[in-house]
Image (cartoon, rainbow, N blue to C red; front, top):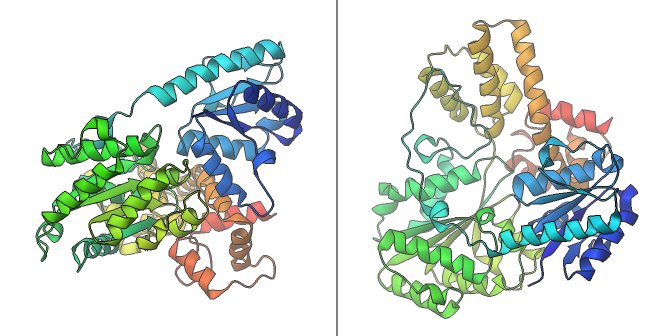
Length: 494
């Protein structure tokens, strides 16, 4: 299969981009450039994200224009932070300073000699593609739970890990979502669930807790139908080349680790008949595979080959022989319809949307962090966290971090310290707000802006309820979920 190269560039550099694309095509690479692939009526944000997910390497043209381009910055942020793609910068002019996010030991200086630069680019791509396509996934790293003892250091900020998945031993909240997942597995028949939520809303933490902790809970183990469950967790970002063989290899390794049974040989990875036979074997013994896919949108952005695997899974799940649990940032129904799949895969899911926490839930997290480190928690701190975060899990931890840090450094609290905390929070949260704002799309941004009094657009009740469920609007739909986000939007609309 030919390697996929995503080309990121500023509109001012379109001629250089065309030359790069032409050269790459002459060398047998498949390239993606927005003016070539995007058509009228396309959802640009989703199509760009999917194109980056499908790419093996991202090539970015660096110029004075691209360094100031919001589109290029967004594409790079998605490629580096979410898609985890290798980046090759092409310097179009002398004296340009690379952003810190893409500094490498070596880049390609196209401005010196275009032909020599193209040759250097080809060699760099060969190295990157060889690494991406020929290094097998490290299955042990993906599957073995990191059962490290959680030790609390009273001198360490207990909220310093905000933005990362929390260890299953310290997971809190999402009681309603866990109850619904339990009911889908232990009811009359085994059923599949799609978990939906904005970035950093806790989807990965929830899946980790479900697979590595809650799976052993009496609610699951002692079910009335005496079912046994084999939970397999897969982060699609860790699968370098998603295809039927690589996904089945992960299934096989996970099953063998938990049951000491090899469901099929390594030579049969990719053989869907073997996969179906194993499903039927376990089902006959009242044992059920629970296949948990984190970042599932990456799988939907792959080649059509996975369609056959998904159809096999859909057939088994619709007959109650396995359960599939996915996590995505958008409704799986929308994602599947916008993908290359032909299988009606999305029809088997019931959706659970993760939203902002109620105050009583996030307050327990803050109370635990302060108690473990001997800090005094006052109602003023809780009110400040409520104002800054609106119950968003990521922002609750971020605001807790800055309050705890200020107390640890200053040892006291006054209006100046509080204002400093608010300034630090606003600066750090801006990137997150920008991501949410970008994902809303043109219509979504107009709907949210109308809630803040901009424009004369009237939002439908269905859209309002959807934005409330996703944690974008507050509980009654009269505003956005927190004051700093409202201030960010006003700044964008000026």
